[in-house]
Image 1 (cartoon, rainbow, N blue to C red):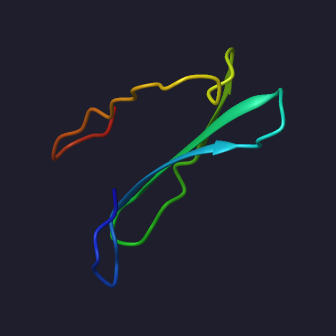
Image 2 (cartoon, rainbow, N blue to C red):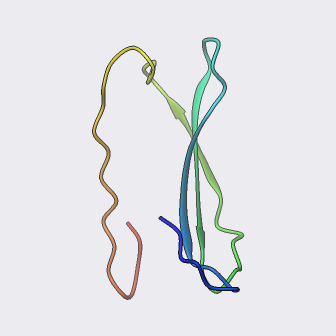
Length: 64
C-alpha cells in the first residue's frame, strides 16, 4: 500500500530471495516518507509453492 504524496505513506511487504532456503519476509512502514521500522522474518515454509493469503491489520494508530 502506498500513497502518492511527496512525503508518502507506505506499508512494504517483500519476500527476499527466490532460489530456496532460507525464505525471508521483510516488512517496513513509512509515514510521511520516513521508514526505519524494517523487520525481517525467517519463514518456515516456501511461499512460492502455493497461493497464500496475507492480512495486514491497521487503523489510524497502528499497523499490526
